[in-house]
Image 1: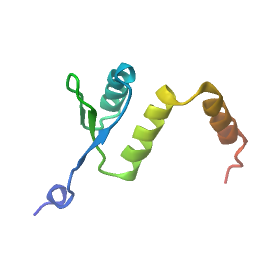
Image 2: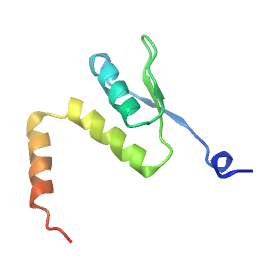
Image 3: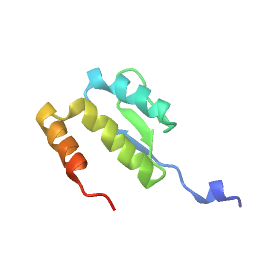
Image 4: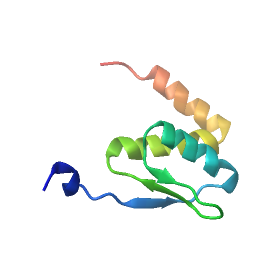
Length: 83
């Protein structure tokens, strides 16, 4: 058995507003995260590692979170001490 067979790939259903679904799909595709988006169906995303999970969260937040919440998050990132 090779290492890729040892990792199970599970598709997760992601409930995203239909108007944002295509944008999320396109961005995940650019990030090389396996996903599919069929007409009138929820977005299906394969989350195989923690990085993919964080990227999915980030992409969905960029499109769905209120502007004020995004600004607060960005300010916290800028103010976080390094090292």
